[in-house]
Length: 498
Ligand code: UD1
Ligand code: CA
Image (cartoon, rainbow, N blue to C red):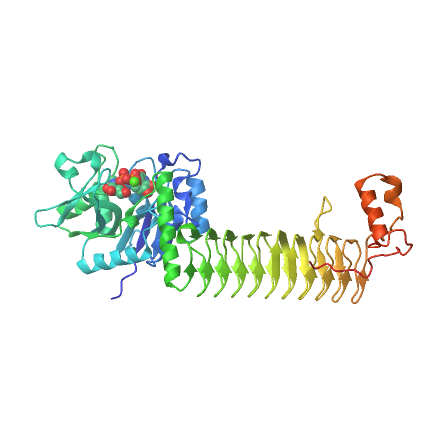
């Protein structure tokens, strides 16, 4: 069965959302890495409509700017001061071509779990039945607040009555209006022209269109949906969290069915745009956010937050925070690592514990294993950065770059005072404060030479436990205290790797 493309989808998003008690317009609140209206637009796009229009009014400029960011081709329709879903729809029709024919869908900007498949389904049902209007309905145990579906004795849909306008008898109806519809656009236009505001709320109701179409002899149908989550709107922050958790549960389930191991779905949060390869394992308390992508077989977590980060196949990322970073295949990161924007770690590279990186390109097989800040750095393939190395990139005014060549070795506790350039195949002695470049094959030693002062403890700390220990050691001959052989410098002692 092929479903015709709808002529248009109209997303209603003009409402204020007062119960959110927020400075942010309701439809810009986010779950699953997308705004509520972003979810509505994604579902609408799945039907490949010829036109997509979003109706705005409350915080118009903010909402319109956001929509343009999400979907540059979506049209913005402004609702005027006439209230109601019918008026909102009319305002959208006004900016669509006047000669439009075919099916128009109406959805809400605050119903984030509605899927594109459900809308495609709705169009198919609508087309097959030859209806002028088809409404998605649901049976609720507590239908309070919703519009009710009024059916004739033969079961056919007669119309919709709002809670506030319903009789006692109508309020007992448990089939509710989801607010999601497919309409024949011509019928919709004609019927809306007849809708008034003579009702309990003084609004122009879209729901009246169904009764009007029906009275004009048109077929009006209901399409019952079983999955109630898909019709649920967000009105307050409690619902935002509830729907956010359910969306996440669904996303996690989808990834597990795709071959991803998620050890604890309840504490694993995966945004809508994330991609994950097969046999990846996601450990508890992990958030994969934004446009993050995880390669096949990678192990992520526990306690890890990755935002817009790319992880290669077979990499391991443990107890890490990363933002706009790229982690190569089979690389290892963590525990307790902080990768800031512009970090690129090569294949089989390592960023270890208590390491912070920013704008740093770390080559294949290169290692930054312990307690390091690497900012504005290029670290060559196979290089090793010793524990406690600081790339001092900021002089208080400007940032400067440091380059460490391939297979070079930086000893522990080194400060690389940028800009410096350590060539391929060079060493920097532990404890250096490097201010100049190092050529291939050289070792740079940039620290004070060790000087041992004989008898200092006996003179300056006489009578202390330290003094006693020194004397005892001298008597036992365990240390060469008092011998002159102490020109020992550590020049040959450049181990930087812990
Ligand atoms: C509406 C339906 C009701 C249905 C319910 C489902 C009408 C008259 N009633 O009621 O039958 O059961 O949705 O949730 O349609 N909006 C605008 N402009 C407006 C008013 C609303 O764009 O002037 C948008 C809102 O932003 C929101 C949606 O339309 O996204 C629904 O509005 P809301 O006020 O929540 O409608 P309900 O009274 O709940
Ligand atoms: Ca509502």
